[in-house]
Every structure is written in C-alpha cells, then in structure tokens.
Image (cartoon, rainbow, N blue to C red; front, side, top):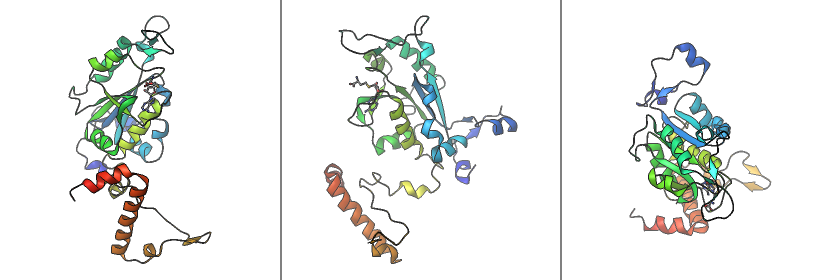
Length: 267
Ligand code: SAH
C-alpha cells in the first residue's frame, strides 16, 4: 500500500482477515469508497475498471466494487424481472417490485442520507454527468448504481426510493452498465491515492472550467512538425502562460458554452 493510501483515514482492514486471506484475494476494507451496482449482467464488472490505475487501486483496496445481480430478485420459476409497458408499445420495463428488492439489498449497511450515499439510476433522461458530479460522488462514502435495460425502469420505484437520474450524454445505450463503468472511472480517479501523481487532476480538462492545453512528447520533430519552441525553453513561467493561453483558445473555439461560463466567473 502506498503512503498516500495509509494516510487516508477511512481505510481500515477488517480485523477478521488473516494475512493469508489478504494475499489470496482482494483485501476487504471497511470504509473504502464503494460502488454497489445493480445489474442483470454482473459479469460485466469490474470490466475495464479492473485494469490500469483503477484496477490497481481496486486490488489495493482504495475502493471497492460490489455488483448485485438483479436476476435472483425476479418473479416465478424464470425469475422474471420485466413486463410489458402499461399503455402498450414496444419493449419491456423493469418491474418496480423486483428493482425495489435489489435496492433494499443494496441499502444494507449504507447511510440513508442521499448526500452520504447517492442512489443513482443511469438514464438518458438524467442530469448530465459532469466533473462536478464526479467530485460530489467522490466526496460521498460510496454509491448505489442501478443499470437499466430494455425500455427502462418502472417510474414508481425511482420516486419511492428517491433515486437520482444521471445521464452520460445525449445518446441512447442498450443498458446502463457501460455508463456505470464510465461514471465509476471518473469518480474513482478523484479518490486519494488512486492516481500516482495527485496534481494531474488539478489542471486537466474540466477541472478549472477549461479544456486542457495540447500535449507533446519526443521526438522533438515528427514528420516535419516541431514541438512548440516554448515547451523546450525551460522557462516555466512562459510554459505556464502558453498552456493557459492554449487552453483558453481551445475552449473558446470548441466549447462556447464552457467559455461563456468561464468568462462569467469572478476571478
Ligand atoms: N427508453 C429509454 C432508453 C432505455 S435504454 C429512454 O428513451 O429514455 C436502456 C438503459 O440503458 C436505460 O435504462 C439506462 O440504464 C441505460 N442508458 C441508455 N442511455 C444512457 C445514457 N445516455 N446515460 C446513462 N444510461 C443510459
């Protein structure tokens, strides 16, 4: 475990684990930021989250992932989780009673306060997911994510359980699983110790309301294209000014909405 992880106060290995268990499987950490994911496809997790920095952090117990299979909560011999939409039309709708049982299971041991533990339905009708949302989720103790399939979920269960709807963008996916992994990725990388270099979340795109400046690396010249001279000058002040200038020009050209909001900010 890194120094960073050790200084993270909420982490404590549960006392029942023997060193042997710790080596054999992922350490179970009491208090580590946890994502509980209700899904018909638990095998989709951790998926890409099991690789690279998020995977390493998962192995280190800096965060935890608990997929909850929706299927066993289904009705009858076939464990049906969905039914035809009231009022007719195409597709199927996940049943309120079935989803409620999974949400009850997911709620065990979590604070009822939605600020401390958000309960989120991934949905194209939701509020757009942004860096600010990721920061809010990272500041919570964990969250529960509900992945929809087919036409979606019976509205009543969303109301009854004060479920927040979050969208990955203005497009329609087949299911909530890819959206859940994207949301978790953006959130987990903000947790202390997950990125090796903590400074790298400070000036990247969207953190200060600007898109990030362009990057370059060796070779110094490639297919007749040199690296901008200032970046090789060793003049840190000039490099900073150039990066800020490029970030502003890019944001103005590509994202007038972000640019207008940035210009309105007091500082
Ligand atoms: N009939 C719905 C779309 C259902 S898509 C509608 O028109 O609003 C099936 C599932 O995929 C949804 O229940 C949701 O969980 C997920 N999904 C689809 N698009 C998404 C998006 N842009 N963001 C987050 N989740 C999405």
